[in-house]
Image (cartoon, rainbow, N blue to C red; front, side, top):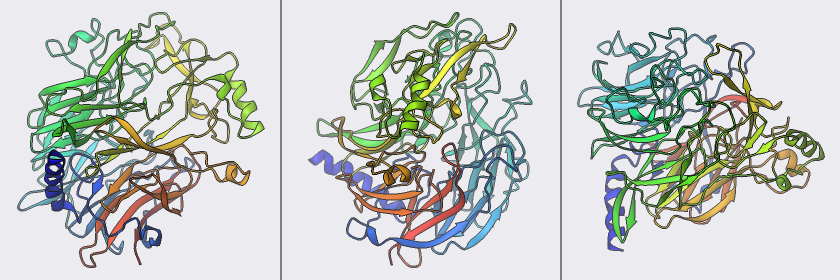
Length: 620
C-alpha cells in the first residue's frame, strides 16, 4: 500500500499542474487521457447539458471534393483558450467557456488533391518564457508555427512561419503523397514529427521520424525507420530491399517522458503492406514501439509487435506512459494497444516486458515468393480485447438478408487465424485492418491502475491476385464485393453474430479484465427487438477523477459516460453525427465550471451522416 500511495501521490502532484487544462493531445505528454477534475461525477453526470456548439463549416461527402472529411480533432485547452484543427486543416482558437471564435488560421491546402482523407487530429502547444506557439502539420506536408495569442504565423520559424516537410524525404518521388494528419510531439525546444506516406507501392517517400528546432525550424535529428547499412536492424532486410522502402512510418502520435528525455514512437507496416516477397526478413523497425533519446533521436530500445507485417496491422495508437505496481513498488511503464487486440506492457526505461511475451509458430504463406515470418509475439497477459478468430457457426443472423449476403462471402473462402497470410483464395481474418484498437488508443486511471480501451470487431476479406509482369510487386490485395474489403453486409452490419464493439477495463497490475461492456447500438436493430449490438467505432476515451469514462467513437451518433469502476452506463446523449474523435475536459478559467468537449463530424469510413459540430457540455 505504501508503494501505491507513493506512486499515486507523485502523479497527482504533477497532475495538479494541468488539472484545469488539456494542454496535450492525450491530456499529458505521456498520453494517459486522464483528468483529475471531479466536478462532474457519478452523481450529477446525468444532468449534463450542451453549453455551446461551434460549427467549422467544413464537410466533404466526396461529391465536391474527391475525398471525404473526418472531424477527428481533440482540442487543446490552455489559459482559457481552446485550440482545434479542422478537416480542411484550419487552426482555430475559441473562448473555452463560450465557444466564441478568437481567431482562425487557414494554410489553404488544395482541397481537390487525393489525400487519404480530409482530416487533422490536432495540434501541439509549446511555450518558453516569452513565446506561446502552436505547431501543426498539414495534409500537403507543411509544419506551421502559429502564435497562440494572435493566430499569425511565427515569421522567424522556417520560411515565414512554416517548413516544408517534404524536403529530404520525397525528392525521388515528387508526385507521391506526404503529410501529417496527427499532431507532433514536443520535448523541450524540439518538435517531433511523424508522417503519413503511401503504402500501396513498395518504394516511396521515407517515413523517418524527425525533430525540428521549435524556434527556427532547423532539422535537429532524424531516425531512420528502415535501418541503413551499418545501423542496428539493417540485417532484417534481405539484400537491397531496404533501399527507398516506403511505410514503417509514424502516422499516429508519439509520447514523451520529459523527466527521462525519452520519446516513444509507434511505427507501422512497411510497404507494400499486404505482400512482402520483395522484402524478406523481419523488417525492423516496421510495427515496432521504439524508445528514442528525445534530444538526439538515438535508439534506446525497441519491441517489434508484428514481424514482416503483411496484414496492415499498424501500431495505430499513442503509447500510454503510466506507473504500475510490481511487488508493491512503482514501475514506470509504457503501454501499447494494437490493431490485433493485444496489449503490450513494458518497463519504459529498459524495455523489459512486464508481462511475459511468447514467440509462437504461425502459418506459412501459400503465395509464390512470399516468406511469412515463422513466429509472432503473443503476450500472455492481458487477454486480447478484440476478436481474433471466426467460425462458420458464428455467421450473423440479425436479419435474413444479412445472413444470406454474408453466407455468399463465405463460399470458397479460407477462414484464417490471427496471422494466417492472405492467400490466393478469399481469406477472412479478424481483426480487420482498422482493429481492434485504432488511433483513439486507450485511457488510464492512475487511481486504480486501470486501462480503458474501445475495440471493434469487423473482419476483413482479401485475396492476392497476380499482377502483370513488370509490376512493382507480383501480387496485389483485392477485396470482396463489400465496401473497403470488410467482412460486413451492404448495411455495414458485420457478418458475425453480435456484439460488434466493446469497451474494456483492464487492471494493468494483474493483467486481468475488470469489466467489459458492449459499446454502441444500431437503432434499426433495436427497433426489431434485438439487444444492443455494439458498433464500429473510431476515436478514444478519457477518464476522470469524478469516476467517469467519457467516450464517443461509436457509429450511432451518441456520446456516453460510464462508471469507471463498474462499466455501468450513467449518461448518454445524441449528437448531430457520430463522434469519431476523442474528447477533452477542462475547467473554465472565469466560471470554474468543468466542461467536456467532443468533435461530432460523422462520415469517415462508417456512415453517410456528416456534421461540422464541436460540442461542449457542462452542468446546469
